[in-house]
Image (cartoon, rainbow, N blue to C red; front, top):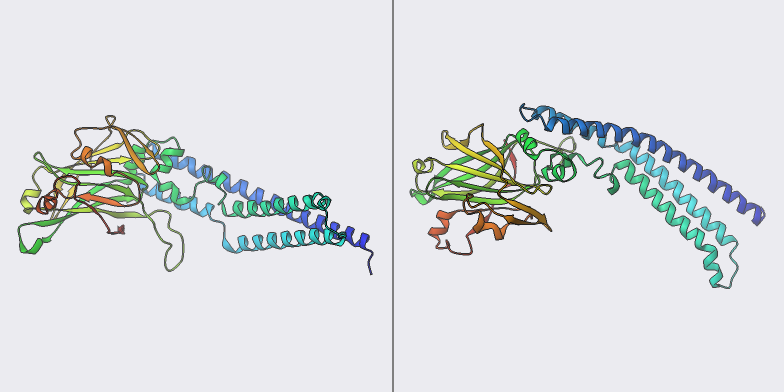
Amino acid sequence: MIKTSLYTFILLSITGGLLTLLSSVGIFISITMQRRLERLQEILEEFINLSYRSDANLTTQIYNLIEKYQLHYIYPKQPQGLILRYIDLNVFFILLLWSVSFIMYYEPPFSFHLLLQISPLIIGIHATLFFRRLLRNTISLENPLLSTIVPSPPKLRSISFLSHFVNLSVKSVLKQARLSLILTFCSAVNNSDVRNVSVDLKEELSFDDFFYYLALHDDASCCFAGFGEVICRFPSDPITDKPVPICRNINIPLGCFTVNTLSDSCTDLQAKFLIFTRGEKHPVQYNCCFMKGRGFLASRADPVVTVNRHIVYNIKKDKLNVLSSDPNIPRFQELLPHFKLNGNRYYFDPLSAIREQSENSPPHIQICRKGVFID
């Protein structure tokens, strides 16, 4: 039988060996992470540099950069699982041996002096568990301390994230999204002269996470007003289970409105489309004119994109607070109290409101429940 004092030293030596092995794993992870962080930041810098070249079509390059970013961001599951299991086993045996070493020398009765003696054990347990959590989060890049340095791949399509944490031009990034509006004429309502028109926002690259306000109007009145938050959630590929950080050629339904006849709807129709992001104080404004197609209207490929400095805003607690408004935006002031960022898209159809006798306050606001789709 091994002497108690000798056995205690054996346990402490085993603990020291396991701590040495655990520290070597930490060094290995640190070296691997350093290389990953350097590569991710290089790709992020290249992405930011491309965003300023708004005069060229760089959608393919930006798409490939985000895909490459995801390649370096995601650590393979099999080696990640082996490393985590190794860390868990080491931590378990270290805590077990520490506890056994203290139990062997415990002599009743209980006293408050014992609490001071076991305080190093309690501190060591907390420090070891924190070290395990730190290593686990570092391997999977889920550490909140790294979220702003190396954001997750879907964050690179978030206009609000890029505007809030990175010094880049929102206007230039949105130009690469190639935003356009599509108005599709549906069948007549109850065989009458009233037709439904669906409004879709088309993006060549799926940039999201912004608040918008859209007004469709002619010289006489406003025929449609929509506002809300654009959030895209792309599930993993159903066959390969690969994550999808960004998509191409997506359509975002913004609502629908009614018109009396098809010919009346094509008379000098214009659009004012405002985009509000979290990191700015002035919205980006698109002024669009439409060209007629077969059963639809499409905005022209060369919209006038400006920064509307008449509107000053901030976003606090998912509420859009407009500090200075622009009277030239149809129905903007009327719908202003309903602006909030909750992931929903709302629209207001004046003609439908008149038919339902709800033109007066509060406006007849509806929620667009159609999901984002890819054509």
